Length: 225
Image 1: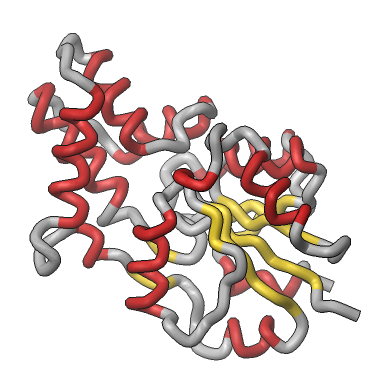
Image 2 (image 1 turned 135 degrees about the vertical axis):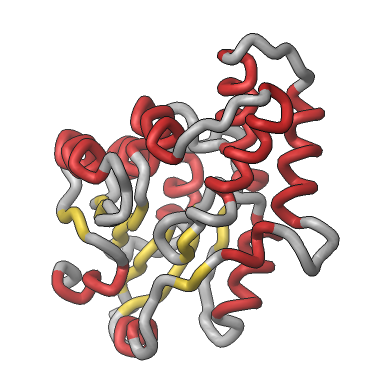
């Protein structure tokens, strides 16, 4: 029998992005608006749903502070801060979340895939940096779908290629949870204790019928049976 499949979101699940993507949002909004937004405010927007795309969220927050700027201008600024010159980008602040041995143990029972709001090449850069030995197949990025999360398109693509195998989706936002529910894929929510809105995040996951809410992926083995 073919192994069951764990599909991972990336940001906040496989990698801690509090000092990369979230910090890039803070800096981008401040660059254009002069306002220093907080991580809790960013999470409030994430909890509303519809803001899985950090470019879209940055542009929205800038506009809410009364500044009109072209979307592509925001994207270019964001990407410049995130990637830098290859040696100084905020992407280098990311931290791999899995403890040693986790994927070795999971790999004995499961196959792995990724459905992320990143562009696929950006996901591959981070995977090559932290876990070049791991196989994630397929990797579906935001550039591989016509409708981003919370639309289920990416999960439905993965399910269509999975040959009827059991699938779980592991994510950290309500858009991840809604994508899983729309695709009829069991959802496991990650609600970090470091998140200023953890209780709200966990409540949102429960409302979306998550099968479990965990602190991080190192607790996955306790719920995957």
